[in-house]
Length: 308
Image (cartoon, rainbow, N blue to C red):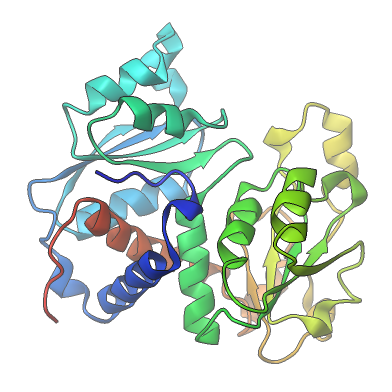
């Protein structure tokens, strides 16, 4: 039995296998419409979510399976004080696989230690978001055809942004990756990520405070929102929330083959006028999340891949 708690739980060969399967699902969705017949996915979301929860549910339904679960801690026995360990023990007897989002870092890992079904980390605090990483990787590969040698800029909240942390950890395993980290000083990537991942692996990167000066260098621009829910101080959030706003004028500085991604939700860090630019791929990115989660569910349940 396998769990997915961190993007590093999958080797690069396994990542390729999942991305290849997602590509085949995109091309032939009808061939996969009953592979999960009789299977159930439990969605345990202790924290609000739109895209991640609904894309998991859509993925399982598209595969012919069923979904059960809850969408907030208040509507679960967590409100009564039940532990994650006890919850997953019970859920293991109701479902075949589980996707869990939790505000506490490490909670899905704890669940995996007590679970008799595969556990997928659907986001834990500011730590990891491996299925968003799979979504991002699928989108980048479909746009650029490869990972080696790309320059990717991460812009916005790099301190609390679990999608950023997960994607950096996944991409450093490819050759000649270059990162440009664009954020205010208060929202720079955590020191452990800089020292234990980028520096230790001798990955080329630079940290800057102005988006405009690096846009011409980028193959991919990965925008993020400043996350109100991660701040202890409302004043700090208000001061930093508008640090970087991508608009049509700034897009004029970027190359024609530079694409914009965003894990969503967007607040105001990307002006709506950018949506009309053919290089804006964040809604396509969200759509890809369904296909890659379909592929992941199939892999973790060891389901046979239909011949298309």
